Image (cartoon, rainbow, N blue to C red; front, side, top):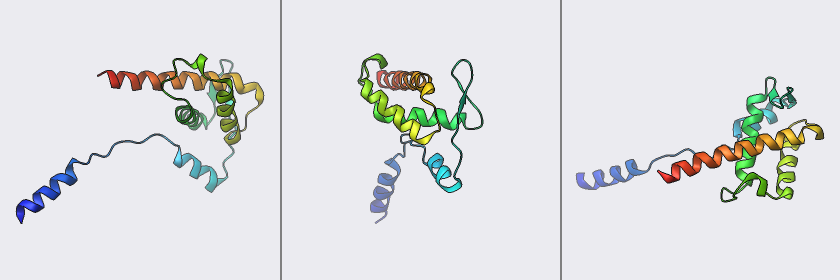
Length: 125
């Protein structure tokens, strides 16, 4: 009987819990519960500023990672329709002017490239 218990416990130990994708559950819950004002401003260089800048960056990164396939060769190859869908998703969550579209999509492209780079490096190891 002791051997059976050891086998069962070793099976349980071998299951390793890994991190899943960032989907901003806490951020979405905070917005719904507290009716947060999701207004974001940008500085002269196009970087987000204000109290919500970190949440904004995280949200943009999670949206672009979810919607753009890692097998796409470069951000320039991404379909304009998909870029518009990403913009619409971000714009629906955040109060943004259409004048911010270029800055937001540039940030999305940078975050996607960074994500792809990290993923490919880990696969090459």
